[in-house]
Image (tube, rainbow, N blue to C red; front, side, top):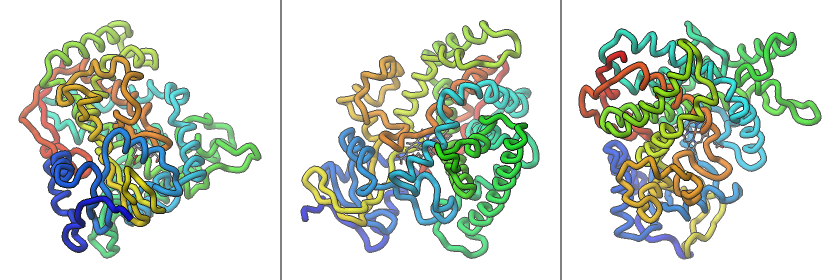
Amino acid sequence: KQLPPGSFGLPIIGHSLSFLRAMHTDTVEQWFQRRIKKYGPIYKLSLFGTPGVFIHGQAANKFIYTCDSDTVVPHQPPSFKMICGERNILELNGEEHKRIRGALMSFLKPEVLKQYVGKMDEEIRKHLEIHWHGKQKIKVMPSMKTLTFNIMSSLLFGIEQGASRDALIELIQQISNGSVSLPINIPFTCFHRGLRARAKFRTMIMDLIKQRRAALTNETALPQQDLITCLLNIQNNDNSIILSDEEIVNNVIVLMIAGHDTSSILITFLVRLLATDPTVYATISKEQEEIAKSKASGELLTWNDLAKMKYTWRVALETLRIYPPVYGAFKKVLKDFEYEGHTIPKGWQIVLASCMAHMDEQIFPDPSKFDPTRFENQASIPPFSFVAFGGGPRTCPGYEFARIETLTTMHYLVTKFTWKLSCLDNFTRNPVPNFKQGLPIEIQPK
Ligand code: HEM
């Protein structure tokens, strides 16, 4: 067998410590590049106790994202399955994955989500009214995390502001921390807290399922009122249910984890960018003010308004190119395969640095330059080279959801406030970007 070049480093520890250090200092790209110089573009390494192969680039993205699920599947830490549940979208493959994904898309597709622009708009205005108006200083990152969490609770579960929602945010935080922790179930560990939070969350969602099922039977709920109602309402051709109640619980947990951290990071980077790039600020401001002028006072944004925010979305995509919330992916090898003349053995993991393609100067000339015009003609960007939302059959199903909440939030921030950075806050990766001080800004109403 022609295994890739490289080394597995220290026994058990492998390269984990220096990799984690690179994540913390957001120097993962340089970390990978040093080894590329030494071993070439494909090399073996050992991370978190598992041998693996590092691959990157547009061709590698295409190969992995479209590889059949008998050969390569997503690889989550063992704690993820124990806390989120066995039947979540990230653990399932092939037909099972398709079924779950199809069910989630029945709510997350644009045709359904477009009805919810007004609801998101209300959540965002309420949030700014409570947390921004009348304030001089804001920590953007925690504020945006609360906002995206609230939007998700309202749209996915129909849980509006109040005690249940506050309880939920705490539980999801514990579940999220526990899902990527060492699976040691003794009091005071993150994992233990995560398991307890999951049990409480499960009870809450099971209660909601009962209520929504009753409302559907009495015809007091609309079929697409929220994600849970939508999932209960869809059926196979023979009228059998598509998702069991347990599957609904498992997948709602994954949606909450996958959805609220990522969008809040994008919005936080946009706020930072607008404070430091006057040209981008002026152009976004003009676009958003024109839309605001076309609305009556208090009128909610619509799907058509979002379609006019073309420049703002290009800026968001360019922000995702340079600062992708999800930098890469770990995958598990189920059977030996050949890649670029190397054998990748069963049992290894693939460390796919998918977003390294964002800095490929053959595809994105002068890649460090912030240039939203790159996204003027999206069709001209080669497939699998802009992968902030992944690619292939597992492309992020939350793209449209993220687009609506990002554009609506930016509309109200730009038309209602001006701001400047309180300090030059840096971020670490953990594994998603996290501003050390939460990105503090000073704001003024417009
Ligand atoms: C800016 C915001 C977002 C970014 C950058 C993002 C990024 C990604 C990426 C890169 C993947 C693929 C990971 C892989 O290949 O291993 C993914 C998958 C996923 N995302 Fe997102 N995401 C965002 C927002 C959302 C939202 C709002 C939701 C839910 C409403 C969501 C739900 C999911 C789910 C369920 C998956 C797994 C899909 C599957 O395995 O079929 N994401 N996301």
